[in-house]
Length: 212
Image 1: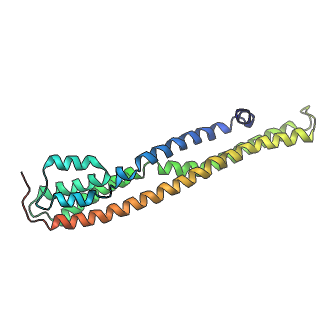
Image 2: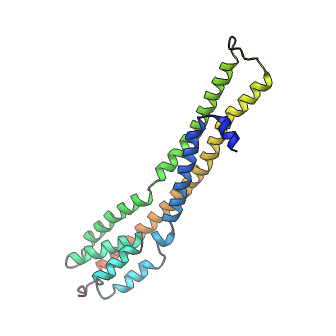
Image 3: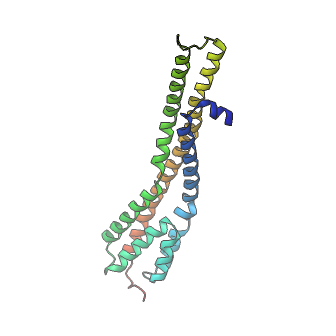
């Protein structure tokens, strides 16, 4: 493999960098988009249960905020309801929507970079192949002193094509992971929106005063 990379020449260096960056981003997204960090399954029901008699204490809200992305959004709803009497639904929804936009931006982090690598890798591979072909045919031109050996020419073309092959090897898995993470984030955002609406209705229905 090392000899192939050396034979492919300098144009393969950007592809190597793209492959390293894409691998790092995929690992980071797998760790950051775990369900436990974004959307714990029972957290909404627990937040509703703990606030049946009123807004919970500040330490409970702070603990909820540190729990996950969903917990952060629910905590913003608690604070909005705690700020004014009557727990107006519009203020609660506005606060949760603002928090939800920040969460959505965080969930979508690095996805554009993955999409860019998936799009650019085949082009970089093609560029390396074109540069290799130019060098090969330039060395075979009359007056260069190089013999027109068909076997040597075929070997040089095969080496030039390594760049295109490596570009596709980088691009295809990156594209698959980008589509997977994109779908996962979209699913999370939908569930966060539904959970926020349900929680806003719950807070709007509270009539008890906040507990000290």
